[in-house]
Length: 211
Image 1 (cartoon, rainbow, N blue to C red):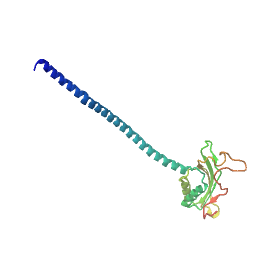
Image 2: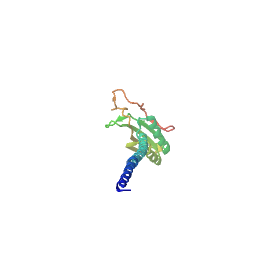
Image 3: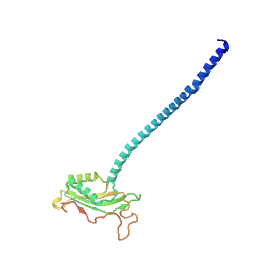
Image 4: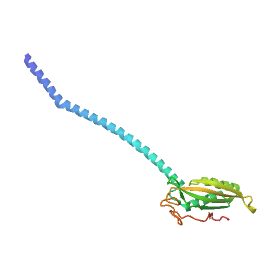
């Protein structure tokens, strides 16, 4: 084979190799690079989704804690005056303490200056032995509804009950109902009262108590 023929064969071989590279290898290489880019993007998307999932799980746990806290706050400062429920709570405290007598007289709710909470002024009278009265004060402080004793007067019992104590106290309970009582919208009118709760005007004593 002469030199010219050899060059022709070599050129033909190189052309065939170039054709194979152009037709088969380069497209496959492009597909591989495209697939690698897709895999990298999928990994980034997965990482982002995992981060979002972790955030959603944390939000769900926090929301559950907030719901529990809100439920507790609603019991401490309920959305309505709920005077019957308030009287039952205080009566229950008196029963647990074992006092001889307890009377409670809730007053008209009064809207506070912030316009978000109404105060229920309440007069409470208790009589009984020292330890029973002390236990009642503890029970009052431990009620599921928040209370605040503003004044307290202690005096000995009269006559044969000199060993007993008689306690007269002023306390406050609260509600987020801003439409109850004086100062509420549309406000307290002279000669009439506005609000969603029916308020007792006479003290209510515990069942079976001795006045």
